[in-house]
Length: 553
Image (cartoon, rainbow, N blue to C red):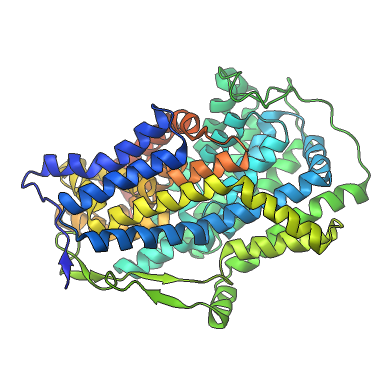
């Protein structure tokens, strides 16, 4: 029997919206203020979501349970699978000492911690976002930063802040392509529109990142390097998104940014070398940071050997992200399981969609094509090149599973919560509250995208969730659908730093377990402030000349 979603079950939109927000509030308050362990806070949020979905929104209990199970499976693959395997590689490089050599080689480029952040968290992270997405850049960059001696809060929080501007074009343009395919946007038009919004923030975020770490004075001391990093990313981002398409935007922009910064540092040095590894004003942010020591010198062969596992990782992640490779691997093994009692039995209703539309509920076991599988293969190949035997690799893998067990449980619970809110219509009720803001809709519609990513952990999922609503609302208000479809994705990228799964990935990569609440409290201001700035830009593009000239109709 088909169940139709109800977006105002209480007959009062304000009350319905408040009740729909309860699960998210429960989880965030538990994490950020009650200092609950992440898996406990997630379990509390999931329990409250089940209660609200069944007893307020009228979702059949069996459907609610199956939606949560589907989300939990999605949490294991692809998200948990990425986390497990990137930590496995990191463990291998730490155990044989090659990670220390890698740290020394990075410090050889620059000993200044601020410049290391630009190179690793922003530029190198953007490459991994473009090639793989889905938590990979935060896992990689946070692990490298903690290895370089950054304190846990600095490594976690700054990796999350840096992983914003590239997100809309992550995983070879998946969010943009999905938005166009699912909701009928022209893919080049919406890619171009996003490319006329995010370059402003690709220029701003590096400044914001260093200000968050080193304060205003510390930022001013290296402004030329920050400017080079941002401009060399923003210009290719604009050009590729507007004239080539969404697939290679981040990859090309990141390579340009890394190359430009490294070349610039050969001819420019800051007047003062910043050796602190803690956030400005947070000198006790985890206790694991230490003052930088002069890097050890290593011969070229040793440095190449230390970088080899990470080069292998980069190659495998990029290859696994190519559509032709994914499609080929899916033809070999990619069974699809329809969730009986849920698949095609839930209808989304107007005004979210023009006509009642049934929701699919299928779990695709795309184990071969999953990014985590590419990372696992890279870790195994890298481990063999480092001299590990198969028994040693198996032993290290078992230890890694034990190390990240609670993080995997947390990711499962959080994805269960996000999937349940989607199928029950709770998140749509929250979205409709934003859509009812009239002339202020360009601003609040942007925040709808932010909310979507904060809830689902994915810019792609947020575009699927709210992309249709953005199109309907913009047409009713006389705005460009491409403007608001792009705003959903551009605003969404700022929600990436506070989504629960990203925070768990960061805490796991830095081994700062049970401190997810500390990370959330730190990044929340940065997330909402940057999202509001995106909203202001979109509002200007909607109404104010000459910004209106940027709009793709």
